[in-house]
Image (tube, rainbow, N blue to C red; front, side):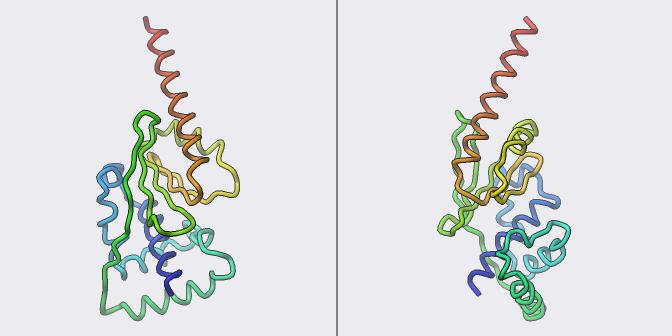
Length: 176
């Protein structure tokens, strides 16, 4: 049951990010108080609704998928007339010099989950072109959900940040 609740929290955040989430809700941390990621019945509803359109199965171990979705259906039925809040835990961190701003989601869980934000579309594009195939991620316009050890994405964001600074300097030099 606990592993299903962990999956529910992760999938509801991913589904919320994929819908009408704004950059300001990520920057301020208000996304973590959104009812779609904290109110149990809404969490169940959103992942059931987005199950196929977002291919959420890729975030659940293959052998657990059928059992998980049966559990979700049972929970939807059970929580039709009652509810509870599950507040996601996170740690906000940043290193502005390297261009890194992120939340470590549910810091005590494995695998590690991160939400990197304040990324430009150019940085996102740079990262997407270089991500290894064995990493689970969800890109957004200005953010990247990452489910793996952070060393790969930290390196990619740092390289993208340096590239962006170099391009800005070249633009300034060209204008003068």
